[in-house]
Length: 125
Length: 107
Image (cartoon, rainbow over all chains, first blue to last red; front, side, top):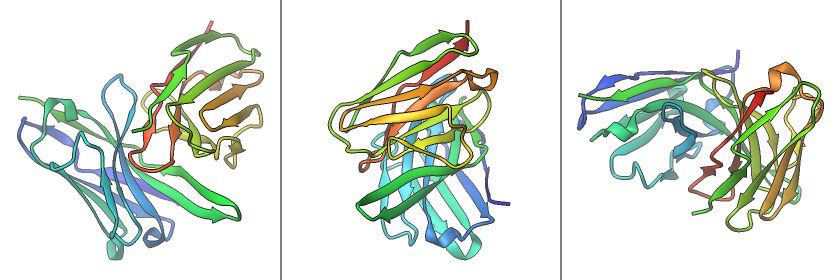
């Protein structure tokens, strides 16, 4: 079955750290770009970070730059998000998301076609 | 950064109705726009990509249009399972952004 399964969420105090993991299965993980997207309780979707299929290109949202680190282990079909210096405003469900990216004759096709079920991170004292 | 503004934020409609949600980008994004549906407690689901291409398995009552800065998502003949929140997303470079969402509720 093609799926993404996140783990590692939980309750952490402000200033603390947490490492999220995402296990991919059912597809060739090392050929896909990957992202983390989060959603604060009752709020909309916020893109967090991107990593290319090789891991050579990485982007972050300004809100997490310098505090979060995205990485991947293609041998283990896994994506990670190391979150340091956590703040209350980082409280959210974090989704691991697969990005489809391909050239279609005249333009690029880009979209997020596979989402995990999400893992809840709560930052509170 | 590219900002996306969806309207309306809230929409009340009945089963069988036709509804349209709009998404306006702060600058031109060609056709690099996707639409997602999200139900409470669930992950978003891709409906439309490249502004107007229906994702495999998505019912044909969903359609998308537009390019540049103005886009629309139309749902024909609303079904009970369509009541959810809808988001647009631009994919014309990073940072990626989403619209604020449109909550579609049963009248």
